[in-house]
Length: 420
Image 1: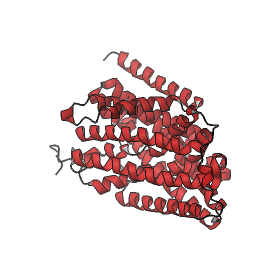
Image 2 (image 1 turned 45 degrees about the vertical axis):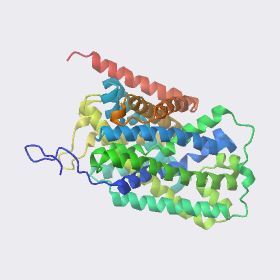
Image 3 (image 1 turned 135 degrees about the vertical axis):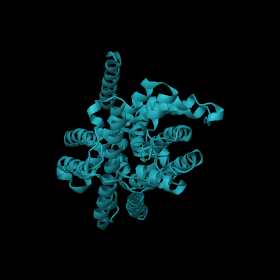
Image 4 (image 1 turned 120 degrees about the horizontal axis):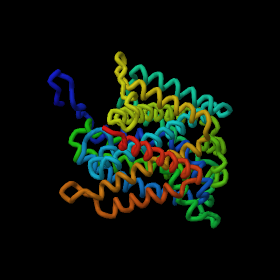
């Protein structure tokens, strides 16, 4: 039973999630719109070496997941790396992780919104994207909450759609396994850049860790749930990548606006196109709803600690939501969705999220064996992998991301320099 304050208000969240629930939450966060959106930008960078880029992204994601799982078991409270960085490395590193999470996931929101627009009405993708953000922000404002049932339903729909795409591709007359052969026109930089972009499709396993206060026996449940969810996701993604490559080829995939829709059309299963588009829209809307909730709650936590304007910490008296934080996030995401392209949004998002996990790996390195430290190579490869992938993203993403991170550091320094 959760503890209560003297006034009878619960001071802790109820621990109700078991291993299966936690795995489903991880799958809901990962197997979603990312795979519908990230394939084409990654194929432009890696070409026929796309599967290698996926493998590199998976290795880095595994290290990040392992480090996050060990830290979450040690610190089973809401906040994720914002908490781990603060507790293991100091206030600044916790702040930096939180800042990178907010800016990176804000860009993820824009990418998800653009995925809705691209699959729902490609001729007016930006307008649809902005409208989706406004609609979901209003829903959140009135206290609409996530539920495990909704997550399970979305995962089931998306898995069914992806399975249909894979079957259509492997049974198509146009399928050619020769398209999986590695070409010689791709550089190491291109593969690493593709890995950084594909990392966007994996960045969701930490959702399990950030729910640490709601997991039963977190020291056992979280370290089992995160790798399990990641392994299932990798298997699904590998099948989808192979399906896309054998039907469209590297060049066709790189040019695709809605890659999985193009796969079923070229495979001669055009009747599946509306199903794929509906599946992509459902996945993107589900991810977007969860992302807006997550970013606004992290904004609330940082505002309470005065790392962001304290006015954003307000709670609506009727709907009991951080309404100012939600509106601020909604406005920023709507503007980004209306003005940027999906490749830029994915690149910027990956930059921020990779730095966020770099802090998690650094924090995991400081754990002692008695605290459940992972094998030494895990946080080392995770940290170096995050930094390398972040730096090899498209130049515009790196410059924009570095500029926003620098702005965050300036804000932190200015706040610290003010007299108490």
